[in-house]
Amino acid sequence: MTLFPDMVADGLNTSIIGRAAAKGLLSIETVNIRDYAFNKHSSVDDYPYGGGAGMLMQAEPVYQAYKAVEDKIGRKPRVVYLSPQGKCFSQSLAKEYAREDELVLLCGHYEGIDERVLEEIVTDYVSIGDYVLTGGELPAMVIVDAVSRLVPGVLHNDISAEFESFQENLLEYPQYSRPEVWHDKKVPEILLSGHHANIEKWRREQSILRTALLRPDLLSKAELTEKEKVLAKSVQV
Ligand code: SAM
Image 1 (tube, rainbow, N blue to C red):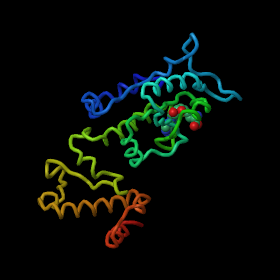
Image 2 (cartoon, rainbow, N blue to C red):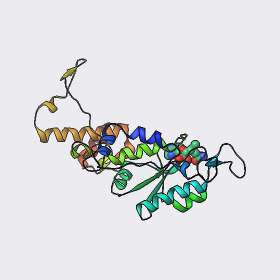
Image 3 (tube, protein in one colour):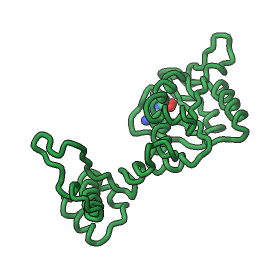
Image 4 (cartoon, rainbow, N blue to C red):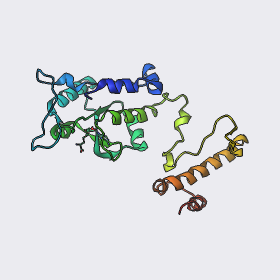
């Protein structure tokens, strides 16, 4: 639900997500809140009571747009309001949303949306980070992208979503492709060995080292053996 449906549709119509939608693995529909404007000028925003800068999206068009979606789905859906005041979006929330049959994303614009309609229809308040954007469209696209790639069949091979950053609270290990030597830098020997068990062991160690260096906050939530904890400590200051 947005005032700028083209922005969302154009942005999600390409590459992996666009192909998945074309194949029918998922479907992305935009609802133009302006279509539910109740005055002849099609305006959907007004000045905030009590004064202050900017305009606010009015409750009624948002509510009517929501009602149309609810009627179409036939039940009350989960409604995510993109807001810098929400809880921070994460890979685990993406996994949770990927299990939903329907997910409604509500994009604010201007100074946001009249609080009363939010109280009536929103189930989740989600932020994509501690900064303020002009609208909820980019955050909604971030969520659709992260959730869609977890839908079975969307990635070429489901294994590619199996281990990556944030799974098990670790960052992904470094990866290399051809050529074997580039700018005098050689691919780590172990990756050329064909020894799968050793490669797995090396990758796990690299994940731990990388997480210890770059995201020690994550590492504290990861399940590590005693030996792995010692390894992590070796790079932490
Ligand atoms: N006045 C609001 C406040 O201070 O909390 C900010 C409104 S912002 C300019 C306009 C819209 O952009 C919001 O209604 C929200 O939908 C979206 N938005 C801005 N920053 C966001 C963020 N970090 N995460 C998610 N949505 C965001």
